[in-house]
Image (cartoon, rainbow over all chains, first blue to last red; front, top):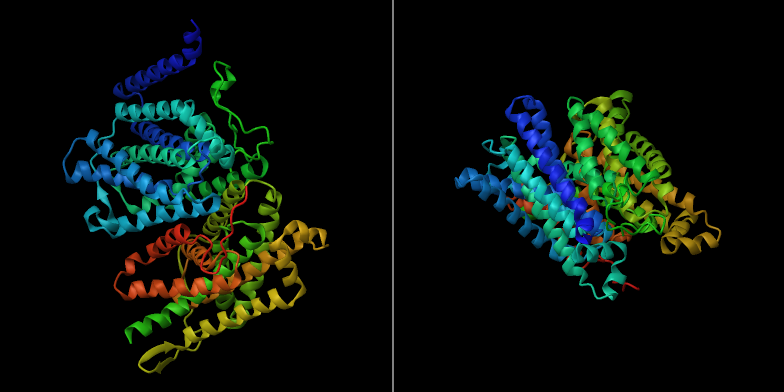
Length: 324
Length: 292
């Protein structure tokens, strides 16, 4: 009975998630949702995966990375090479995307996670740019004109990836490892003194985050028919960053809600890209000036229902120490 | 000869990076903030110079001065509106705000005048080629180098010989102690932003003359590279930014000279990551031990 009480929220969420999947699947097969809505839905799911994966790095572990589009790009190209050049099935592409992005995360994470704050931000930004420039210069993947990719992303795939991402990241956060990451976010020196292997957990969070960014890259590549290095510039990194910052640094549901809302906003403003960026930047500045913890702070949506105590903390300094 | 030619080009390019890097380094030295909007101040300077030349019909030096003045005011405004309320906030909050300001300036500029590039008039400076031991040096690059050198000497003079310079050094050393000694910290920070932004504005005009093509997103890459130059020299150290800028310019020119011109933009970031790993304090910086 006690176990049921503790895990009730978890099972209810899973049932709700599958119900949502079934409803959308039915809407798509019955043709009620037209192609425009399906596109938006897919794009939303990809953004949610990206936001959740960056949330793990910035919101949970407190490592400020602004080169997330780099991992997204690595995933997109790795999957496109698998399916287009090597003629392997889509599943191999998705897996390769995750593994390639994970390796990239390991290579960049091990040296640069020794850096802190601003320096880490610039190093990851530099990494994102290096990936873009490298893709621009490799003829095998088409250089500046990019690669054409067949459409393979379907709703079951999108849902499966989304579901796996949220499940893994939410459970990771509430596990021993997640608590260790949160302690690093709150105070790295104190965490170190408590015997937590800070380097190990920082790299672990970074690698898991890059893995899911790579998965999102695979879905993206096989949905938009063409991938070009210019799609993965640092404006893309900033887009992802905005989801996480706006939703609340340290709140998974906040990041998810922000990703969903901002995808809708940007779909409506698709014809006015300048206006969209002006609104984004003003919102970013205002949020930082008046509510630096983001919309949700470190709270989760589920904590509104008081089903279980989510991993929290960091609010006892007036929200100042939330992210290093 | 080819090598020396590349060196000459590299020094011209490097002096532009050095001018932008000075602003980064001064601001970082005083408020520990990476002013992402600095590259966009540089872009605004370039456009102010362009409009001054094409619409007001003024020459090179008035355009340069006008660009510097406008950028100084812009830099101070940015500081007052966006950064000052966040003086005690977390570093991440300030960094995100800086990114926001940068995007805002870029897209407001695109909104106002469109994203199309503009071509700087080529007749602004006398164009003659000077041949020295088989190396072609254009009078333009001499002019550019001369202007940058004069500005850098002026900056050294301001920082080391004037009262405001003394205040700037004091605040960057210890803001709390400086405040106790009766220095107006807020005004000093504003002055730092003004001087740094003025240098970026000058760099914008010079960049326009050297590369002729300017557009609203032109500030991003030179801005990031200038930051790399500042880190290379040791962030917060003024001579470091000058040397770092020149060094970065020369390295980039050598890389393009070797035939890898497409990789040129990547080199700066590779240097950045290497320097952060092996010598995070930069070439001129002292290693400071972290205290718990």
